[in-house]
Length: 120
Length: 510
Image (tube, rainbow over all chains, first blue to last red; front, side, top):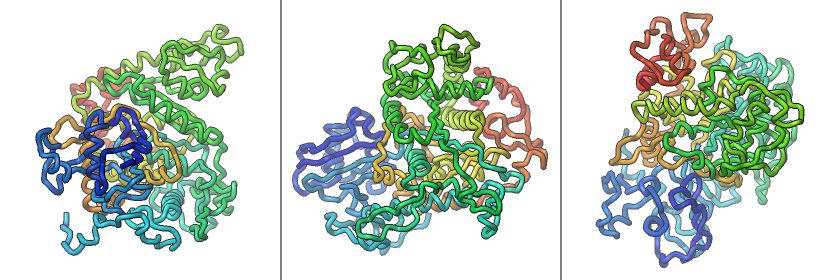
């Protein structure tokens, strides 16, 4: 699935300075959600400090730290979300309108991650 | 915190539509589909209108200038004591950090296409209303009595935009780390070159006991353009005349080279180049020692919270001094509602709760002849962020390595600051309970203090030497056993005129 992914507001530091992945060919298949995209970014593109971008969704699982590398991938993915303070736009619209992490990605979608935590 | 009934969970934002074609129509214009949900649902154009409206309402409610009664139809602003009303607007400055708040503030103040967004776009094309070039949001601040207030206060042709370079206060951070941010900042600055004068001053300048005169600061703005200041190469060429700094393609100049040019910048400009003048070194010549002093002070801080607090106090002290040096009596701050909510908690935790009315309120009246106002106090950081995106304002990269400004709270890890902890607490709580920020800021606005506290002539109050907060004489205590390694703060530390919060801070710098 080809997606365009943007990292703005300081997020690009976490991805090696890359601010845009335009028409990026991802291994995600039909039916993949934002959670799968986050897992993909974490595993293949994130260069530093995943704790500044990802959140385990402690409101759901009660966890306070990111799970150890040996944890089940499927379990981890169900808990993944972005850290509070990071805004996600899907095709320039608020992801809250689409169900947030449960939104099913479609071909040529544009996902923008904007951090309000960093910068000036 | 109250719990949410289960039936409300079905209306939660987590239940969304599958495709954009299924999005409802905006309830305001009833033409375009909804794109954003921030308390209400808006299309893009109505969202911009709503944010601009909040800005204009906030800026109009300040009315700090004498005669700002709008022809007698509105009463003078009662929140500001009478002795604090400013006689007239001289010049205004904008504190610009590069974050979303200050970026949006700058855009709203200076972009003439937005200055008078009068009516909600209702036509199907969504075109914004046309504006008159004479309109300006500054006019809403008040004007001469009897005249149209929006015409009487004519803004200066150009405003002063101040950016404080703080990288020297982050220990172990080389100047080169600031490079990508500086490049992005220079590009952003270019958007407003015709309306603003950008001055970029290093934080260590606050330690210079000789208050920079206007000539020095003009030198900063002329020679220390951003591309020169944040050099990526140590071997940059040195321009032969300060006027050459106005060329579009600037040679990269290292800070060391800039310091070598200092005598030429401070002396009379003969046009013959640096060798023709010889003057006492200005602030540029003293920067090296000031930077070392600043690093020493921050290295001596006993905790991350103390470093963040000290940085905050020095930043605002420098902003005020620079604004005054340029003849400004009004300073705009880009603090958003979210920022103010976090600040409310952190101020109380740092022993500065008595300053809530000015630090987290609408206006900062701690100085009788200088006002700091926050016109984005009703705009959340999320709204500012989306506004920037819609307006096509380029996003600036982080000015410092992530995890430093301020030290964020990471669950399971230590070494976070109180400010970072407050930010994380508010952000996480806001996610689950969307009225958190509004509730905290509304509560902070209800905190008041006696007007006499801000009038040195009315009562036994003296301003704190560091944060300028009023300190009752009864609370003045000798700072026993306190010694600061830096020259300027040492003088402060050995005197008695510090508020409780600053005494605590200085004691941690021992």
